[in-house]
Length: 296
Image 1 (tube, one colour):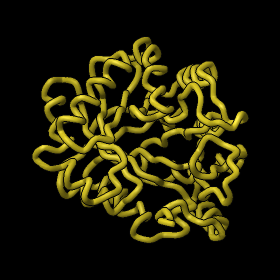
Image 2 (tube, rainbow, N blue to C red):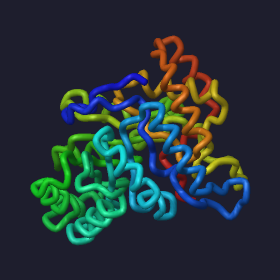
Image 3 (cartoon, one colour):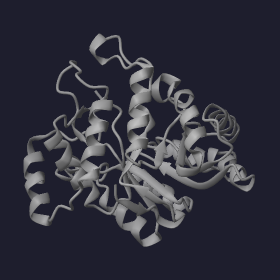
Image 4 (cartoon, rainbow, N blue to C red):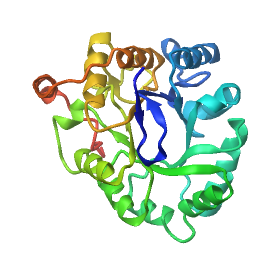
């Protein structure tokens, strides 16, 4: 699988990142959506066997099971992996506690990247970047050798731009997909973030690359809170579009079936030219974009 430099970190990440959201022991009361620990471990092994060298996880993933399940794999493969973790906490004290708990569960003594997670709200961003905010805990952890680089994740590109005015992050993680690009508005337009990231040499991790739209009904067929593309051809198109933008790597889906197809697509990646991209954008004109999310 092709590798790209993750901005100023200098790490060459594979085109697909192993997304910890797919790692769980159970995930739903609906029988067909249950994911066993054995299935999660099989997916981890598959990703590592295919050379995936970038792992992204958070304490809440998999109902809290992702970190404990990944721990033995991180310990065994640590020297070959770029390990990214996250905190959803906004204060210094809470973030410091969560960071150390994640180190223990993941059986490692440092993170390559530690990210402020899910900062969609401007008020939460203000708290996280304040004097007693979560970023202070990460900076202290960096001084102690527990963290190498600092990143931010958000579904809201506008808030990422605000964040980059207040702190010199090393990486950004945000949604980049053609369904969003077909319906641009300030709260989902990722292009200004990608342009600034390129200017500052920030690593860009794409999420929601295989997203089609919100679920049209309450019926769920995949372990995603959004409706994913679910055929290999559709996943190929979606992943190839995302990787044809100024991104380093794309985080795999929270659904193992889709995530496996993403790895397949990345191994056969061919950049899409402008005409091919425009064809996809026309196809997505009828899709409802995932962001901004409806409030009712």
